[in-house]
Length: 252
Image: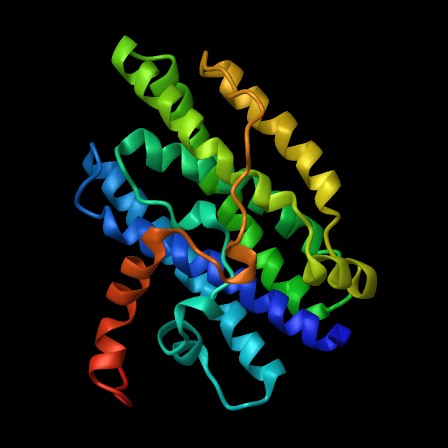
């Protein structure tokens, strides 16, 4: 794989992470505990989908095969998506959604910050735009995690269970594969070992403030980066792509 091919695949992966998380957040519109949170969640979902559009458009241009953002989102099979397993996990209860958000956004913010310094100007510009949005998303989700963890006995127990359940999906974020290594070496991309250290420090501080406990070391789930997904992903992508596949060639 050449460096240029690797960068194209890497940009596509960034789009997959943003799209799948945005889709998960769309699923809980009208299910949040407060009206204000409803509006915030809907806006955050749109932010991620907007980021996916930027990444997909750039990936399509680099690829040079005439595919646009709709082709990337709605006309690729399951195994071609290389998003992290974490972002495709079901919403579950409100605590599950918040923990997933905190885990991913702490990682994503550090990743975007690093990408603003990469040598590919277009990717650096997209990362700089996305970084501003994700910084606010993280602040919002972190406050909710503290509120739940340091709230009632029931909310504390339930969100601790969310931490314990979703922890096994965090290791994949920092497991560098061929794309990560090539982008780092050829385009001064993110150093995942440094990002992991930042992530551990930031997540530990949030969890401590929430009076929660980080889970013990355990087996980490992998596969999303290679297109091997959890059983939940097939249902998500089938719903997401249903309209485009039912009406091929339709535009909106």
